[in-house]
Length: 342
Ligand code: DAH
Image (cartoon, rainbow, N blue to C red; front, side, top):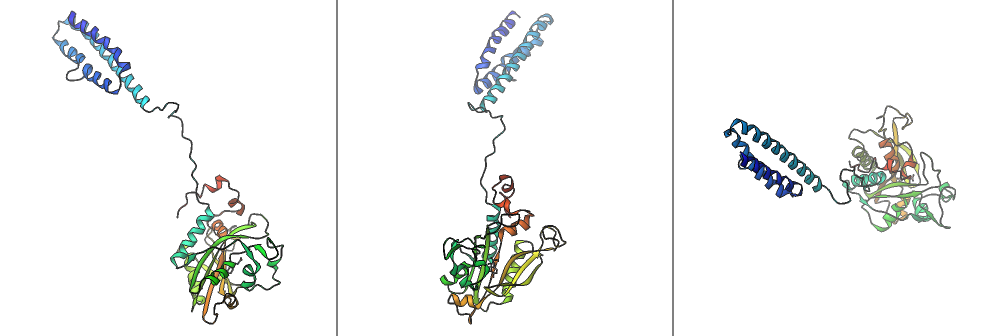
């Protein structure tokens, strides 16, 4: 009995080892003292029933109390070690994280890429041209009359007598036909400039996307089929389209294409001004004079062309009410589309 109490005292000494123990040592101590098979304290507890009742009471109380002390100390040390494992000096891992901003493509860039990809599948190559143009490329080779109002400095940004910021992407039609012989199928995205007010539906700089196909035997049917196929792919398979007669100096005949309003699906809403339709592009069969201006035989070749506004298309698809949102770089607006992949 005395021996037993003495060994409990000896064992208590070992409590002091616990706060210094590392992970491995702690597990060793645990097995050595509390292990179910051969733990020193376990053995003592197992021996209790063989003692005389009086001795059993005294030793039992002391042994059980010591067991609890070990358990508490080991548990505390275990928690301490686990916490330390997660700690880097100077860093509080329990603090909420700071968001890491990741760049994303601007919604208009995404729309341009998506349109180009649809036309790539239809056989069109993406090309670009300069933003500063001569009057010949921007107007005259495109069959504009000399007195066309767009030539007026009030409508265009002139950089010099004969040089201006292009007012549309159509001059790249001329550059393309001067560079490549038909058959030609190209899409031409790019920025264009006009002396327009900066208001909800206008901006002095905006994106256009031009298309041009020139080949033997291209007809109005190819033109309508190609653009209808685009609309069904870009909007939805059952999107309705319509063509309205129009006028452009560089096409004959000319047409504007409307698609069913994507916000109300044709029933009428503020976005489509209650018409159920939205205009998405100007287009037509390439005027023979344009082909001849580029040295293309207009008896042998025909073509179709169109120009659309990716800003406008993005606005109607997403119900964006004001074009200025695209230029203001307000992250709260932009981030809504940052991860948009269709
Ligand atoms: N260039 C025209 C504009 O800026 C758009 C356009 C209309 C382009 C008809 C074309 C076309 O290629 O055939 O409004």
